[in-house]
Image (cartoon, rainbow, N blue to C red; front, top):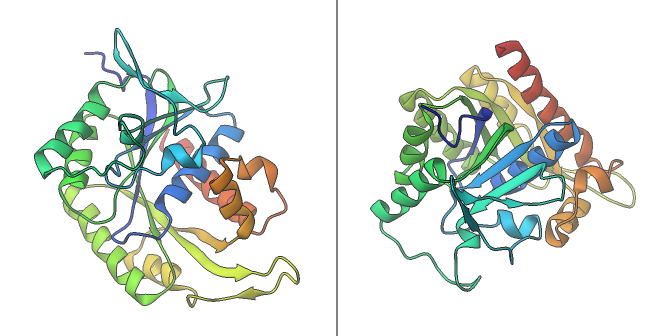
Length: 265
């Protein structure tokens, strides 16, 4: 039976047990890096209480339209190389709070999976809320019949964050979700004037966790003012700042995802 996800080759979840570690940032930059490698990418934003993906691509004022197959995702560019679906497009006012109980949230996630006309995509990246709760279980169960590649876990270096992400590893194990690897975000601050790296939040927690759990470590992404600026302005960081210290880290993470999919094929 053909579904709206039949044309999607790989589905990738971006998870973390903790909020504020940069899941949406990693989702956004991973989509851009994959787009620059010639792939067609979609992002499903299931962070219903904090839908930041539309703003990061500067399409927060766009509307969702209907077609015969369901909702048409919002396209970032004329080439339609990146498509988005988020509750942010469905709110009457951008500052409206989503004050919903679990069943209503779960119903919308199932609708995002079943009723969005994604078309042909190489990757569908699912940006999730923090934690291991209702929304995560609903997302994994709704996507399980489709080509679910696995999960990328995001942490920051300090022990508190690493401890929360360790619980996310347990969630993946209990739900049978393959862990593609761990990303350590905000791993040091590189001074834009002297290029010296200062480890504000310590360093190495993500790599240590990956080693302990026996999963791949995908890389460290430093705090970078140019990355923050590009997210605020909805710019393409991968294209605009190739000399940034965060660029090789993000490009390397995307390449490891691509290498993993080619090996699986």
